[in-house]
Image 1 (cartoon, rainbow, N blue to C red):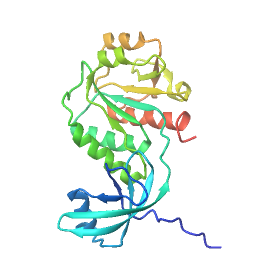
Image 2 (cartoon, rainbow, N blue to C red):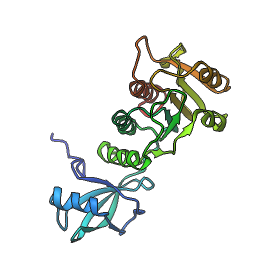
Image 3 (cartoon, one colour):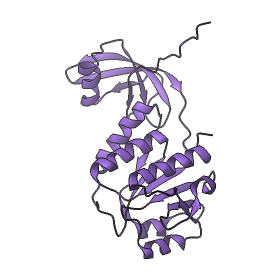
Image 4 (cartoon, rainbow, N blue to C red):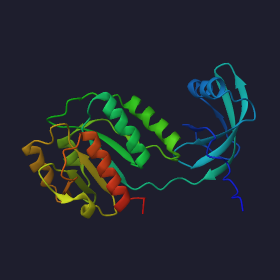
Length: 246
C-alpha cells in the first residue's frame, strides 16, 4: 500500500511573519519576502505558502495579491500547533563573526529557546549585531520547520549573568578543568548552558560560577573543543538526555 503523503507537503515554502496569524487573516509580506516568493520562486496568485509567527503555530496561506515589491497572503487554516520548546538558554561568549553566525543557526536547529551572548575576560568579540543574529535564527527556523524562533538577548557581562541568574534554574557550565560528564549531569527542567570563550574562563571567573548554588560544572570529553563546537556538543547532549529528543 502506498502511504498517503502528508499535506501540506513539506516542500512548500515557509516564512516567519511578525503579524499575528489566524483564520482569514490577510498578511502583507515585507519586500524581501515578496521578492523571494515572486522573483526567486516565481510563485503567483493561488500558490500555497506555510507561515508561522512564533506564537500560534504554523498556518497554510495562499497568495491573494501581487504587486510591485509587495504581496498579500490570505491565511486559510492552521496546520500545526505551536512547538513546546524546552526551557533552555544557551549563554555563550561570542567568537568571530562567521563562527557566531554558524552557532546561532545550529543552536536554532537544535531547539534552544534563548541565546544570551556573554562578555567574559577573554572574550575576543564584544560587539554583537543582534539584528543580524535574529535574521539568522529566523531563517534557520524557517528551514528546520520550527514554529518558534529563539529569543536573542543583548550581550551582558558574566558578572551580570551570574547576579541575575534565577535560583530555580540549573546553570550547567563547560569547565575545561573538569566536571561531571555531560551524559550524567543533565536533568529535565529550566536550564542555562554556559560556554566560555576561546581560552576558557579565568580562575576567578570559574570560582565565581562555582559559587552559585545551582551551578553544575560539566565535562565534554577528553578532547579540546572550539568554543562553538563545545556549545553545540552540550546542546545535543541536553536535548538527547533531558530535552525534546526523548
